[in-house]
Length: 354
Image (tube, rainbow, N blue to C red; front, side):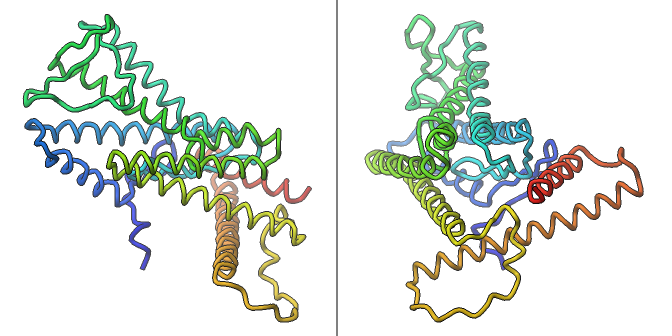
């Protein structure tokens, strides 16, 4: 049985990309809505509707953010296969060339989508009846102040103005969600956030892949402490969860980097594939017993290698089936995604054969 933490709900495909929702997303969303509804002192009646709308806007904005990463990857001659939406954001599974420009453009594409939505919201707010400003502060309270749904918005003259009109309130909340997403992803410089990935791609050609990755890992640890401190001071559970998420992502990047360095120093060329690991290894003298930490890293390395071998085998099987389809039904029978897969597979084969 699979780990329940990996459970997800498929929603369908968009532009050939499978979209999934993590099982925790609806549970956490429901918990946050109930937390707002039952907070002390009691909020105005129907505040739960505001929380529900904000949750839906968050879901929609995160989806578009991840879709931006997918299109950025395809623009760089890569591909995207899946989007996972979960309480702390989204994860886009992309396959891109290993070069700084491809990584930078792919990371930048997500925040650019949020920035474009902010611009559209601000432009629309500027030209509707009351000409309200968007909420520039990420600490803006996005909830009603009475049971009728009244909110205080700032007009372009700089004065607070009460309104119950749903349209400027909706646009203000949409701007707030996307502006917050943009700031979080760009200003928090650490893995797995886009700011960290863009910094790593920027430093890559200047100080090398390894040093740039190490630098971003340590800036990520610094961000983790700041975010965790903020969560403790203001008693924000989701902010504390974000701090833990940053820590785990940075730690995993560090371990992956150490594994790649160790494999490089051992003399094995990973660009030639992983199939040679299936051969019987010669007997070697017994080594001292490894610590639990070293055994865990070794098991993790082996698991990753086996996963890559399995992925290569699946891709070869799919390539054979597509070649058979091409032979039987012709070139026009292939979908756009199948064309991209065959090109990507062919490019990898050329790289290995050089």
